Length: 494
Image (cartoon, rainbow, N blue to C red; front, side, top):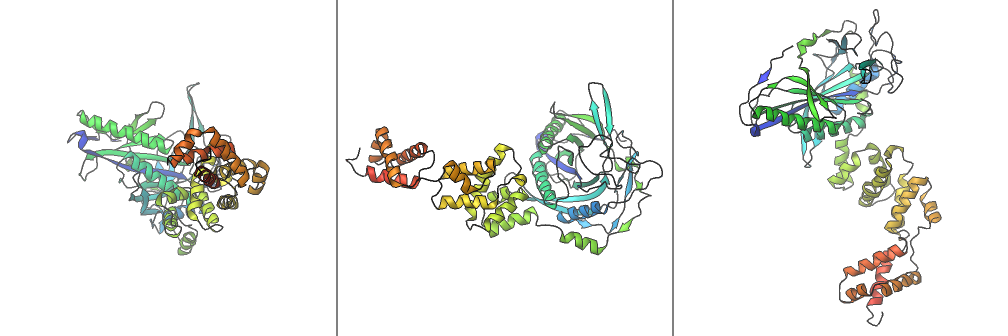
């Protein structure tokens, strides 16, 4: 290993720009592992999902999982990659306790896909194209479980052989926030494909980051460090912010950047040197002798291409164009495929897409977030939301009562009409009942009455609010306002 790769400072730290490239490892949600028939399921008892093949015992032969290849092709097409016509696997040799074979079956010089790109939206609302260098298939390693109490580490081989897709971006990201935005865009695209649950807590989606600094405007890259052990997008951003700052301080103080792998410590909020960074030749790649190279048929490629759904960027552009949504509203809706489907189902029942969007992005999502409910698991139906909106349109529900109806439908699972009837949430539009409420308010708030008679129209809103409070949100606010204005236009009415 090269342990003396260094970079000398050439200019003040303030004149340096950050360069980031990301390596995303995605576990594919196939039923079985990539080269054997063991179940590909998370969370089972340690070392219960293994066999001689995934443990690499003598005399065993790997067989490629066809579904893993199809998922890989799906990802490649969604990222507009070039498809390699020949599939070839290689052995990546290194020793680690969770790698029972002493090598990993991966792809070196002929990845499944290369030269792709992903469009992302930056924090300031701009779109940016990030090129994808390569995307290749490989098998996952096992998992070390550290027991600090007994000062030991245990190995769980269940994860060994899980199909993994590694997606490598070009080093075209220039801030930790851009890296975060890229990951969000990539994760959303992968979720739309249904090739993985993309759950970082389960390790289904993991990310390593390569970060360096260089003189602003310079073409050569600086010496990079690789960051590992980041278990959330927020952690990736925070770790990059720390490492960016650390490298700039090293350069500013006259120090040298050393090419190495560093671990992110969430607890200490710092990166820690792990080892010098390996190069490809350190792994002694050679063709996997037990898996013969083969060509992908055009028939398979076309079959996979037809299975790709409308992707987030396409859906975003369609929602803005077809439904006349603002870019802000469209981004919120497409950020979850289930919300997007729910929205479109509502538009087939009700024509005002803006009202649907306001209720969906506002009260409905707020209630779900408060309950920590996943949108795909709710029993609340598009028909329920449209019924509530129509009841407001027809003055059968006030906005306040409509929101209460929404809450109770979510909590009880009852239909909208039953909730309104059983909870007595129907809007009061009886003029005699409303006049009685207004008369009470006029007696109780003479100072406000005086302001209204002096021409302060905004004071009417205060009385309307008080009327809604007295009626527990059931009064028709429009009628209340009209009654107040009519009564107070008579100077003798006190």
